[in-house]
Length: 226
Image (cartoon, rainbow, N blue to C red; front, side, top):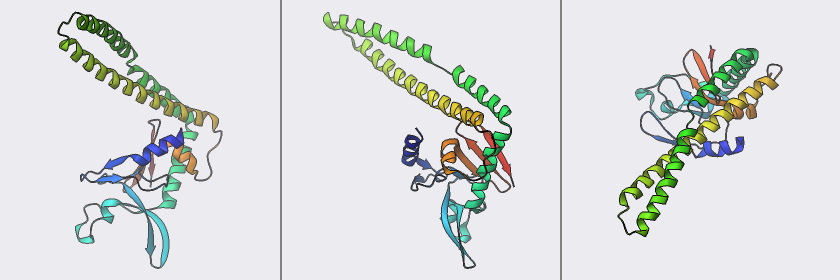
């Protein structure tokens, strides 16, 4: 499942606030999930040379694409090691307060279930069967069936939309359940950065001047202050 999500993520095209389209171009687990809290752009992983020292940092794309005289964003550059520490802190926060976070996850599941449309889908399918039977009768009697045909096309579109909503809802439920399973099965805090865990749990990281906001795939958010 995680491998399939990664393949989907690599095909995503992010539209920046300035209208530019960004195509996923890296296999790094943080690519395409680190955002700038000032301008909304993605952060990009780069090799940084400063005073003869080489390091890996993450920087807002808008700062990389503009000259120093025309910088519209002034958000900070973040060392990769700092991002990793932030994610370890965020994950450990959920582990330390797991009872509270499990309660939040339960509420999230209840919210997802309350938005269900299974009844609507069943009604659409029932009506489609009725219209298809009516269409056959009209066709057999050489009666104009354009109106019925149009209604069938409309309901088919509605059915497709309902199916997509149901699939999305099921995916959200899986993500929430996965987070719950992790919290219940993890007895202690993690001691080091775990890339596979980040791929499994983390949806988005937003960088601000004084904090990071870490969003989990389950819908939970954790602020990590500087």
